[in-house]
Length: 558
Ligand code: TEU
Ligand code: CA
Image 1: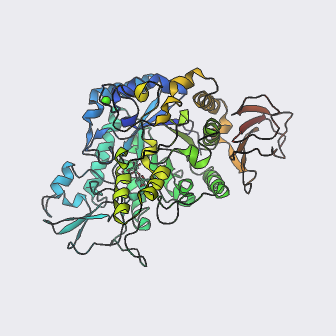
Image 2: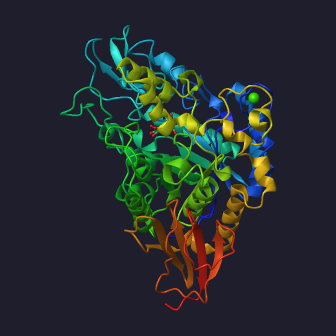
Image 3: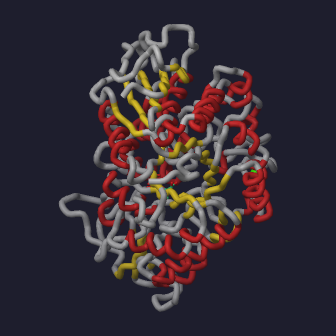
């Protein structure tokens, strides 16, 4: 497998609604992002992934698109977009757009036409089943609660929506839909964007006949009937052949429920599909079988095994995306380390892990500051459709406020969607007026302005991490060996590339741990590249709580 710019890049994900407001309406916008490009450049970012900025009624904050070729007016104009693209390119950064084509908004012209009649030319752009109000086509549950089918009385038909009912699924079996998707891609690539993050990419192809999941009562997530479906590779190859291959772009598919074997089919050399995936296996260590709200304690050894498995399985035949957070996930500190006493150490620890593995690291806005989860006491402070639907659904089933809020505090998506914490000023420097969602009160303590002044801040540490990756190819391309797979506290791994060695030792617990030295490395010849504690003690001494150390050795004795 060859070298590629997208393997050597660090990506920064922007959730536009919450990044920077420029026109005093409390909602982030494109002109706001433009004013923060120097911040991103200084951080060392190569690529920005912009969550949807298209025209949308915002039932799901832009993941319900009404017009794929227009900018949402709240975010600005197409001229603002062009300025942003130019601003990124002139600073040597690239732009990934979010391609959301598993579904559209119900307000999209195609769906409006489809609703007109069964023989409207757009009817077949969506997925329909004949039926009556008293009998659902099957027992599939939407990811946003309730049935995945919505009845349209005047048609006598149900349409499929894996997400909200305002997000009808497109019928990819229809060649016209696939042509329409290519047209959207050409439009944005033609403008000069550098690739796509492909939303729910492995949902495009559904199993024929829409079978119910057997042996369960009530509604259930029917993943195996609409993820990695029968025609998915055919569709992706077609998109690659007709559009993506004609540009030197980067593609990352969002794909829940994939194994490394499945991932190779999407990303392998010569497969001609996409460059890499967001897999979710490590994101489900704290969920039971039902769904993400089914909270269970997570097991560190199991987590490491998942991470290590992805490292070794894709080496030489695929490529990993490295992430612990995004706009759908809670903030990672409390989840995988500690977000109270050792918050700063934890943020650096987790950052060290994602930036010292093989793959392309993704930083979600605020991660570089060590931002934490939010706990609003009232459900009316929440904005996310998934959270609000869950609340309504579980309340109706008699679940207590307390119990529901426990789920929301742990896994709710708004944890990651509160405004970016730029400063300790009123509204955190995000806006000068009340924002669309309240700030996390932690902005007084955790913010970019304060961290800019503090050389020991998470922000400064992330800059170092990103710089090191550029300096040491072994961090990008080296192979991976887990040195202590069964260790209940430490993650220790070694990377090797042509006589260069990297050794990473991470203490995930909030108590001290012993040092560990790999047999084939020599402390007299290695160099401590980085640590998340002041370098005032023996580099081979015991590990302090949540301590991370990265060693480098050249021309190893092996
Ligand atoms: O998310 C896809 C997805 O599978 C979600 O169910 C995700 O796992 C969930 O939000 C976590 O509970 C993508 C987008 O990233 C998300 O923001 C959208 O809401 C969703 O697709 C629909 O477009
Ligand atoms: Ca605004």
